[in-house]
Length: 139
Image 1: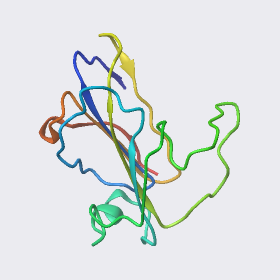
Image 2 (image 1 turned 60 degrees about the vertical axis):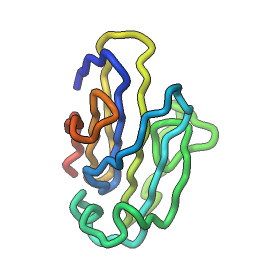
Image 3 (image 1 turned 90 degrees about the vertical axis):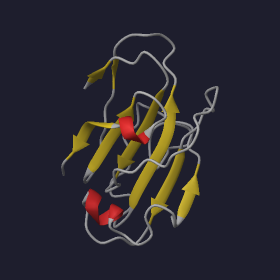
């Protein structure tokens, strides 16, 4: 999906069965160089609702990490020429939250990929009320 940002964009990526939730916090004045990843283990099913309906979501993740690029789990070091490994994990969900600071005004293309359900939400500012679903991986 093409999106034309003109200001700071709050970026929310929900992968591997993650849900449509964005916690309210002030946007940092400058790029931080990382996202916040919250991983929830031992969930049943593969749908976004399986994560968002969990008693653990959103405040009791099993793992909290700060990845430096938009992928979970992360390869170290990142290598776009090497495909990710097969069936890394099962029965889990991840919520990635961060901010995208476009270097220039223009069109940007966002993608999402997951082995099960996933959603990508984007807001035109740091307000969750302005988020829109811009990409979905239905299965």
